[in-house]
Structure formats: C-alpha cells, structure tokens
Amino acid sequence: MEHRDLRYWIALKLVDGVGSVGFRTLVDALGSPQNVFQETINNLKMVPGIGEKVAGQIKTFNDWERVEKEMGTAHKLNVSFVTFQEPQYPKALLAIYDFPPLLYVKGTLREDDINVAVVGSRVASTYGKFATERLCRELALNGITVVSGMARGIDSAAHRGALAGKGRTIAVLGSGLDVVYPPENEKLFREIATHGAVITEFPFGTPPHGSNFPARNRIISGISHGVVVVEAGEKSGSLITARFALEQGREVFAVPGSIDTAGSRGTHRLIKQGAKLVENIYDILEEILPQLERGLQDNTRQAKNSRQDAQEKGTPTVMEVSGLSEAEMSILKHISSEPVDVDSIIASTGLKASNVLNILLTMELQGLVRQLPGKMFVRKG
Image (cartoon, rainbow, N blue to C red; front, side):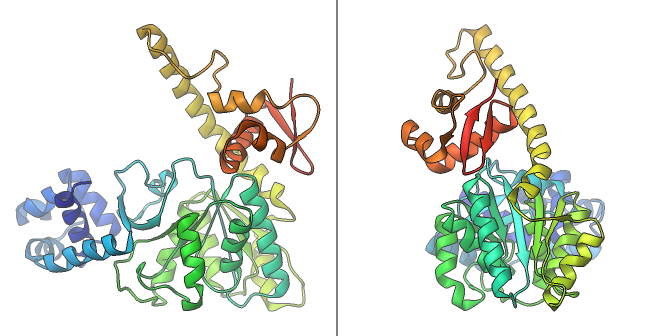
C-alpha cells in the first residue's frame, strides 16, 4: 500500500469512538479511509452507526504527526501494516463480527497457514507446560501453525513447542509491538517473528493494560480453526478465549488434568460443557480436518476452473492432468505401498520440511496417502 493511502488507514484507526465495526462500516459505505476524511460531516452522520459525535471526531482529527510517528516506528522496527483488504490478512478473521481493520505485523502472515490456538494458565504446572510443548511440537510437525498470546505459562510453552517442531507460530499481543510483555519473553518474541509472526491491533506504545486482553483473545480465536485450552482456573482469561471461539463457530478442545489441582477446574468444566477432550493431536486434527477439506474442495474447484481456462486459451499450466501440482507429484512419486518416513520424503524431494508437511496433510485429506504411526506414509489406492 502506498504511503499516502496508509496514512489514512492509521489515522482513522486513531480517531476516538470509531472502533473496529465503525471503521468497517465507514469504508464499506465510502470506499476508503481517505474518502472518509474527505466526506462532509452531514454525509458522515448518514452512515449507519456513525452519529454526530463520531462524525465530528473524524472531521476535527489533526494528529497527523502521530500518524507519521507510527509509520516511522514501523519502519525502524521492521513492522508492516496489513489492512483487511489485503490478501495476507487472515481470511478466518474476516468472518468475525468485530475484526480489526488494521494489523501491526512483525514477521510474515501466510495465506496457507492452518491455525490452531493453544492457550492456558499463566501459572502453569510442570505437567501443563510439558503437555503443551509436546502437543504443539507435534502440531508443528504436522504442518499446523500454533497461535497463542505469548503470556507466561502455557502460552509461552505453546510457542516454544511449535518452534521445537521447526514449525510456524503466531503470537497475538495485548500491547503495542514495541512493548514486549512479559519482558522476559524478548528472546521468544524475536524467535516467533522469525518463524511466523507477532501481531497486534494496538498502536505503538500501548501498554499491556488488562482491558486489552479480551480484545486480544477474540483475535486469537478468530484467526484459528480451533482453540485448545490447557490448564485454566475457573476465572481464567483462557475461558474468555474459549467463549469467543464458540461465538465465532470455532472448535473448542480441552486437555484434562488432575482432579486435585485448581488449574484443571476450568478445562474440566469445558469438557463437561461439550469441549472435546484432547489426549493427542489426532483428537484435534480429526475435528478441524472437515473444515480444511471444505476449503480444499473450494480450492480444487478453483484450480480446475483455472486449468480449463488455460487449456481453452492454449496457455501452458504447471498442473498435471491429475490436478496435482509439481510439488505434490514430486512427493507422491516417492510414496508407495511400502511405508516411508517423512525425513526420507523431505530428503528425496529436496523441498522444505514445512512445505512437505503441509502437502502431505493436504494429500491425506484428498485420500491419496495415509499416515501411519511414527510419521510413516503409504500411498492409498
């Protein structure tokens, strides 16, 4: 996005009283944030949900110095701005009612990320942290991107597990990206940004006030296919994330714990209320795979249409007659009726491990391969 256009996105985000829903309503009605600032106050008041007070705040906004400071800080810290109109904006997040119109991103967001959130108590037990790291490491090895809030305890264990699995992870902050919280996670912050992304909707300099975290939690659940809760007290913020997940139509999972520990009460209550009990990653994958399969079917239809268009126009296409990409064909030819381990597939194809794991998951959904214990694969049919 050009510098001039981005200025208006940041400015509208900073106007008091606009909010996420108001921002979207204004852009939908008037076409762009720049148009919003150029509109008359009478026309602004006619936009549904925008009253005289908010319209007045927009017309009197003059803190352009702060806008330039935001952009300067972003450049200095290598932070990018992603608006909801851009392709890298998480598609799942667009489905929630009050999605943030603008994200601050350090690292990279990818359109092919398959996100699962893992959250829990800040005061985690040794068992809770061990179980979280193991689950998230195995999720990462299966091509899943782990989402959490980078808080102490379970959240930090979730990110570390994903990193140990050489996978991607996304941290959603309740502060500005220049305010690392908790401060002892500064090294973890840098590692996450290198192997995924750290994101927030809050401007630079925003401290981690308690009131920011419910807003943060709706993003954690909003960008994910499901939310796994590991250790949560009866009044834990993780239960707020689970509630958002239910409201957003996401799957909710809970890891059981000891009946004698307070940290198990929240998760056990979730299980009683219908959350799926998690003993291993397959309890998670079998619930979210149908969602991915529906998306895969949509993508397959689009690919077939594109291929047909290319053939009608006589345009060369990288897709084979079978409908598989070159990378998929390369992987499939190294899998037979005899089990082969994933490390051998990676070595034989020369592809990145993350790409191979994502493609194997997709091919498993398509019914082309079957995964056996020990990360072994065989060809079906």
